[in-house]
Image (cartoon, rainbow, N blue to C red; front, side, top):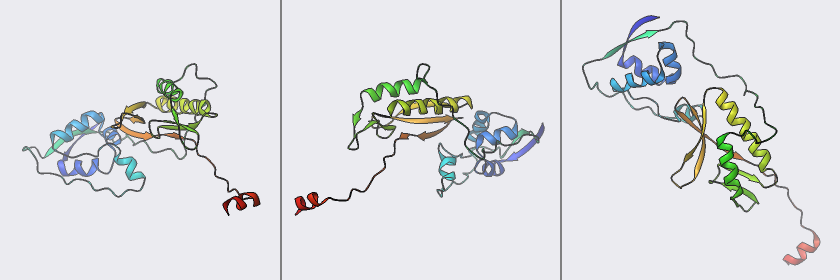
Length: 206
């Protein structure tokens, strides 16, 4: 480890170029500790969903660095020159879909109960909490098995899957990755087929 002095301005630039989890790794501290350091130095940091929205192509503005609230304009941190940020995988990891729901994830068990009481939309699909999960009756068990595999794959990578209450008294599915909440949903896509009108149908229209 190498002890380095970092100014507020330098740390401000770093936290808006590199996610806090990766930056903390390079400094040999936890992301919680680095977050506390930023708050102590009055350095704004990206909020939840910032990096996901940025990756999706949104143009986001970062807040300016305010004036220092105290006399300290720098901080001394330990830097690990051998630490490397975790690079995103070139392709999505494989997800193993279980054969049964006997040992299902807690979130999947709750959604299964909600599906049993769910209403049906105009396309005859079961709908839970807006668009949290939208599937037909015929495929809802398969959908739960797929979701179970996804939830378990996320948690084996050190993250959590949760059902978070919404303002409309519903729920949304989120992956909690080191405090970063990433919403996702499971929806069955329906294929629409054009139906040419028959002569009898055309006569009825006339």
